[in-house]
Image (cartoon, rainbow, N blue to C red; front, top):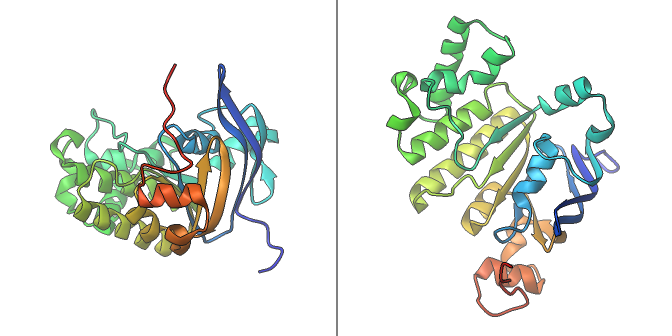
Length: 258
């Protein structure tokens, strides 16, 4: 609908660590119901962007709006309520080794006392089934799972509270191409089932085109291109073209750390 507020609206977002500027005035809109993929090289600020939205890192300047409400201007409790709408799949799963799989899946529900332990176990079984895992997996520890199974468990946890916003941080990192495609398919299915707005950050171009409706690229702390994910390989932008095709020569040059 023309003129509709984007589900996520970011303007002028800045973040530096000492002398290193990571985000240098990020502007980004994610319409409701859209799956946005954000691409960029290692250290380009993709993860920092997500962590600023989640409140894990405090930005230096800018606005982060969910449905028109600036998170950074809200009182702490209201800010926490808004961020509770977000489900997160962390890059390495971030499962709790000391808890069985089912408690990992239901952790947020139990922590917020939304369900009893008995209800949480039943809900965990349902969620595990949605990501293609048997209920018996719920009794295992994360250390007993393969990398692909850990990603599935982390995805089940991310969707447990039926969030209307989902974040995915490098969802296919460490997976073989077939398992990466499986995880991407599960992500797409879960996003559609929930009707959620999704943001995924990745440097896996196959994953980006499978997951995304729209795409944007961060380079030197700024969004340098945005458009349909299907146009990533023919963007008309020299930096995006070099990155998506994995070319050594081009405007993007590796910088030496000092």
